[in-house]
Image 1 (cartoon, rainbow, N blue to C red):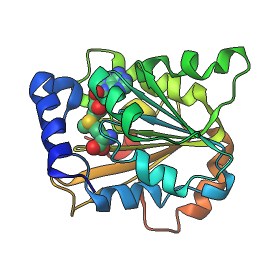
Image 2: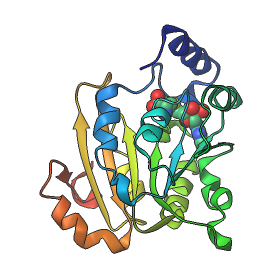
Image 3: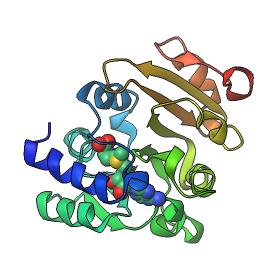
Image 4: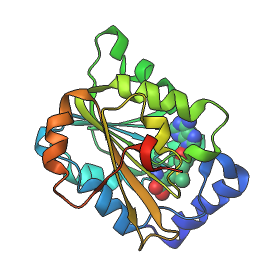
Length: 214
Ligand SMILES: C[S@@+](CC[C@H](N)C(=O)[O-])C[C@H]1O[C@@H](n2cnc3c(N)ncnc32)[C@H](O)[C@@H]1O
């Protein structure tokens, strides 16, 4: 839950750079809870968050993350990065000033660095510069371990088609209590396809982007 001061700080960053921030208010508690309910915390050693902003997801992630796990958050906005570094003192957290498109370099996955169990995106994918969202989808698939998950929320479903070339399975659902209502999606890398069949019995709508998304 954010203070009024934090919300004003978020809004002032939106006014400075609306396309990079993408929203006038931080994500709602119901969307956060729905997103994080997908996470198997006991098995999570490396969690990556894109676009943490004021830490809307960062704090709930840290609250549930194992003591021996790591959280790497990546944001392009220096003001948000400075805020997070100053306000969260947790040895599991690494705050990176950079772009999610460079996640492989940041994690060092091409040179033997650990791959992530989960990547959660708070990015405004639809308003990023041309080609960046596509690059992020591809880099994220490479930065995840086999069977890892990419968790995303957006305000329309168009982004689902970006995930299709890189992920074995994409599930999504709407969260109506969020203002405005948002879509959350979980995209899983190859090894998890079988487990996905089991999870499909849960509450997510299973939709193949090519077949259903306009
Ligand atoms: C809508 S805000 C989300 C803030 C917060 N996660 C929330 O849910 O309330 C989008 C965030 O993405 C960041 N951002 C935009 N483009 C980015 C990129 N290429 N890589 C990393 N962060 C980026 C912005 O600076 C901003 O903090």
